[in-house]
Length: 354
Image (cartoon, rainbow, N blue to C red; front, side):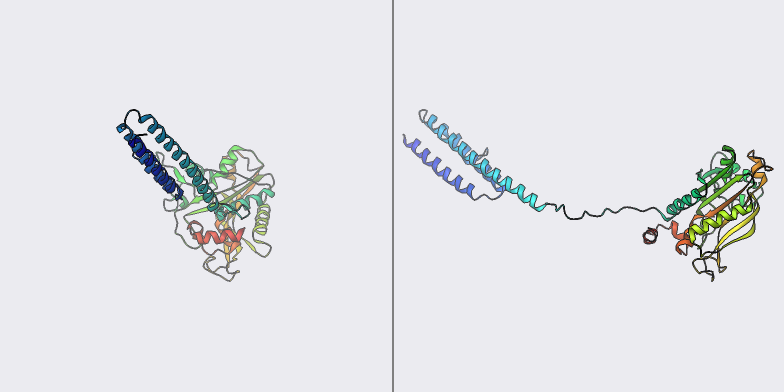
């Protein structure tokens, strides 16, 4: 062995001992990668040693190359063992830190709730279903023909004035936001022959001032029954039963004569105020009664214009305010709260009706 070969053998031994000692102190993957770069990387100490073999004599190079490659292979094998051990340990720590106790209850998912108006619509649909009525729905954008003409509302009637009706800008001059759900009376009677028993829940729009019991947009419940031998007593019986189902036996109902162009005779239907128990408040305007809506016997002109024979058929119709029904049932003292999107109000109400 030449002096150069002997010196190289000592250098390999020294490098091996230093690398093994350094590798034994590695405690993380980052440090292991740094160790690999320092010893086995492109600029590492073993790589530099290999590149220096060209300076040896030709007869010494084969043995020196084998010894250096053996060192490289040994260090690479040791490194892989350490890296695998550290990787397994890291995975175990990660699993331990992120472990899930499947016996714990799950996190509650925040979900929405049906709006009180939607809840009440479902409730009245169920009540009237037991009374033989079917729920139908109609368009909120209507023509004057269905909103007024077919309901016996003449062209000069105050309800058709621009100050009461919201006009829709369009190529036609007779398109409006429906002022009531009554247009579905005509649409239904045009489509089917008696007997007819339908209710029509939906939004209506009127250009009017807002207060505790009025809104420019409100939800109405239309009712229509047409058949032979229907009388005003049938109307009163249906509305009284609805009031009993909704408000309980304590509430009193009142019918008073009123005028609506599409009924004759007409009545307004009221319930004694649940807010003040009839003593008088701002909701009932100190009267002790809250008007639920208008009703009456279908006008013969309305029957005649859709092809029904008023000599054979009679019927009754009513229109009730859904928001007012909710106010009465749950003691809400301001109708504007339903469209106010105040989550404090809506959450409180949702808990109250569950």
